[in-house]
Length: 97
Image (cartoon, rainbow, N blue to C red; front, top):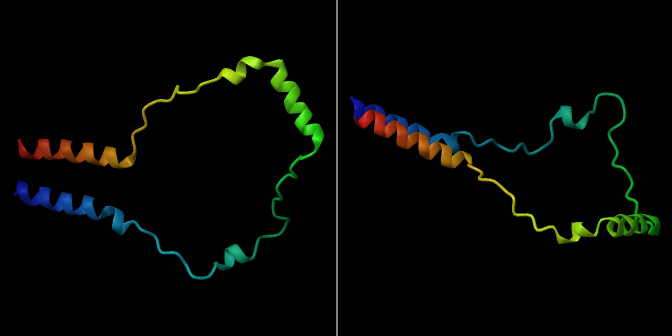
């Protein structure tokens, strides 16, 4: 009985990504085409003038130590796949004991 439960559990977990795939509609839905009253958001204009470049130069001159920044202070990130693998191992250990 335990082996049957394990087999079903593994089959369900292995098929979960393929079951969860969403279909892409061919045409946009009516809700997307017809926006409810009001104006849509507009992006702000980009300041590409020479004054913007001067402001950046002034900021850079005021803090020269920022030019020596080296990053690398990241952490450890665990994805969803790793979590699923760990859970499968734990379930197999629990059911096979």
